[in-house]
Image (tube, rainbow, N blue to C red; front, side, top):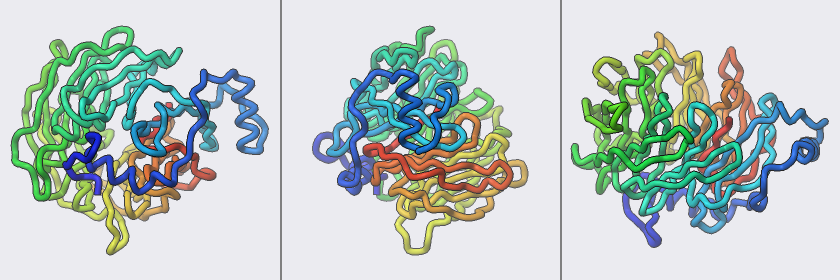
Length: 401
């Protein structure tokens, strides 16, 4: 599984190694690095791929794809593509090189700057200006194997999680979108690692809906840490810890839009949980484990959970079972009810994301080297595959804008 802590040759963590090795032979190359195509070329490419009349370029939206660049069959940088927000059809447009191992991506609230982790032993984060795809520079995260990052809603701070070293970092963001020197680095030293873990493994670092606290999910210590972020200095003060049952291996947390509940995907024991959240104190209370919908006897590692903007449905990516689970969200967010699962039409869905309007769901399938796109029924929440999955080498993150 990819929740271990050992480091293999070349400085890879098992989290990364297992998912890559099983799918290296299945991936295909993306187009060679290229400048953004002219509008006429984009229209022609869309028509050729879909077999339908070309779409207006104003209708196509940008899609950025994360990968590993240091593995056989991996990408050569951040994959560049466009997608049709109505049909979900994806067209590759090239690669942004010069960003090594960009395994997770996030965008600034103003939409002008893209941020990527560089998942190396000497971890770093990179900023890219989207208008001209200029790399604005990189900064050290102070830890090993950064695997997640997010931007604080103020747009002034970048939050990142170092998986291998079990730490979280904060970087300031200036008016241009570039990153300043790190202002905080906290290693999760307590509690002790959970069963089967040799140390802490920070897997996610996000801001609560009220903006008052930032929360770090640590798979190695079976803990979600709540911090108060000083919005002037960029420093962190721990205010609370929430513990799963030993060995659960929490990986990813998503808040309900109401701000009082969140949903936690536990990778190691193949469960999800509803969590109550108190905005005043930052305290998270983790509820009982629930089914991921994976088939009995299947080895499954839930990866990421999403909630629709209206708070009516939640979706969970199941790696191993290779499905997307659909839940009804009930009692104003306090309850999840499993409705069904659908095949992801790929292998090992590492990450999922909604299009900005919520009409599409993208799944990055690491081992098959593909991105699957589903239409989301606004009323029922049902998912329907939107055409053939798009080939993208070692696809570990899809960021539709």
